[in-house]
Every structure is written in structure tokens, then in C-alpha cells.
Image (cartoon, rainbow, N blue to C red; front, side):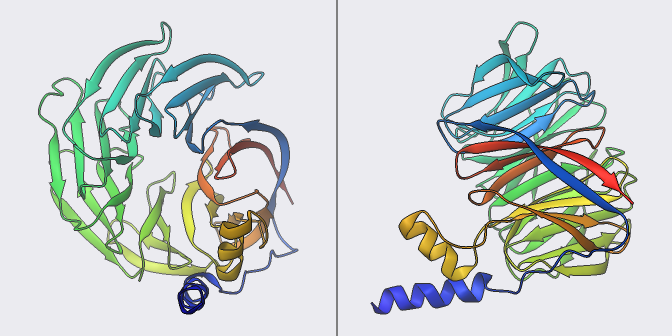
Length: 340
């Protein structure tokens, strides 16, 4: 009983903040659920191709499903051995990159569904993967606290960027490809020179793990989020903290719409007591962990439900579609429509 009481107290301290309430005035972004895709294993990262014609979804078993966005029909299935954690398309949409628990990045030619290469270097789980806007570099990071950057013209010797001292949850290239952002369990986000690997800035302020990252489309802001139940906005290039949002619960993933007007976040579905009860019984707690924020004033304009924590999310290039991977072994597709 003493252990249970301690666990309940710890969960409350970690996630019992008050939920913000959506505003009723001004511009908003409405969401309509249009499809739910069940999975045999917990889903992981979804990613749209940059032309918006394809959506790739991944799961912990390593199954990658590529869907055509014109009708959402599957057109290809791939298998990342040992389980997949992250996926990303090349800029031309012809190659899909997958990362996984085996510490490898695999390259797939979508037209033939053929494995065309493996990027090696890490020896432990890779949690995050991104491709530079020009398609020349791939960055990935995870459990060994290093960021690996491969130049695809010569992938045998990746740069290894050291600075974080705990596992890295996310890496993202800036829209111009000149910088790389990372977020870590060491409670910091960092900015790196993408060409040289040189460290540029340390973004300190979160007091728990930094899990989510998103650059604004114009590259002037970096949004970060994590286990301290906040979203923080950093002005670039000086990395000054300009705004903090109290979200009310752990927030794992972030994405800006392509016009920069909206930020979507996803995180834990339950409060502290609700999380414990949910782990014990599979039910209980509030389950609206998908939040839509108006970027201009950080106002909350929508809260969407899932059956469990949000593992990851993705937005289509045209801003019309939101895909959310949830720990209830379902991936949900939402249609977005601005109002006002």
C-alpha cells in the first residue's frame, strides 16, 4: 500500500495540472474525425510526403503502411526488422526512410518496395529521424544520447554530434536546412549547425524531459514541449524564450500547419490519478490530449479525443489533414477546417 500511495503521489505531481479551456472567440481550426485505422501493435510516427500524395504510418512491430491520400487506400507495406519508431520521406517522395529499435535507418524505394540501403552507426534504439529539406542529409538520434547525421552522397562515416547527456527524443531540421534541433531527457533542447555539426545554442528552461520539437514554417520560432506540461516558444536565431503555455499534462509531439497559423500538440491522455487507474484497469481519466493552438496569441481553440496517450502526430502539407497515432493501437485521421 505504501508503494501504491507513493506512485499515486508521484503521478499527481507529474501530471495533475489544470487543463486550459478552449476560447470561444476569434479564428479557430475545427476538426472532424473521418477515419480510424486499427493496428496489431502500438502505432508510432506518421509522416506525409512533401507533395501530400502519400501518408506513411509505422508501428512497434516494424510494419510500415503507405497510403494514397486521394482515397486513403494502402498502396505499399514494408517491414522494418525489429520494430519501427520513426519514418520520413525524401523531398521527391521516391524514398522512404525508417528508423527503429535496431539502431538502423533503412532506405526503401517506394515504386518497387525494395530495400536500397541501410545507414549504420548507432547501436541502440533510434527514437527520431528527419531528412534535410534538400534531401542531402539524414539525421537520427535516440538512446545513446548522440545525433547521427549522414550525408547521403557518402553515408559510410556519419557525423556524431555530442552534447546531450541522456537519450534524445526528437531531431528536426530547420525549414532552410541550416540548423538541426534536438530535444532530450536531459531537460534541454539544442541547436546545431547542420553542415558542420557545431553546437550553436542550448535552450534551457524546461524542468523535465524535452520530447517534442517544431520549427515554424518561416524558421523564426522553435516550439518545444515535454514532461513538464508546458509548450515553450523560442525566437530564432537568438534562442530567446518568448512565451510559455501551461498545457496541463505531459506533451509529447508538436506540429505547425504549413501557413504557421496553428500549432497542434499531442500528449498524455490522463491526469496523474487517471494514468494510474488507466494502467491498472484500461479505463478512466480525461482523454482529450490533442490540442489546437492559435499561434498568434497561443489561445487554445480545440481539444480532440483519443483512447490513450498520443504517440505521435503529423500534418499534411496543405494543412487539411491531421493524423494521430495513439497508444490504444489506433491511428486517427482528422479533417481540419479554419473558421472565422
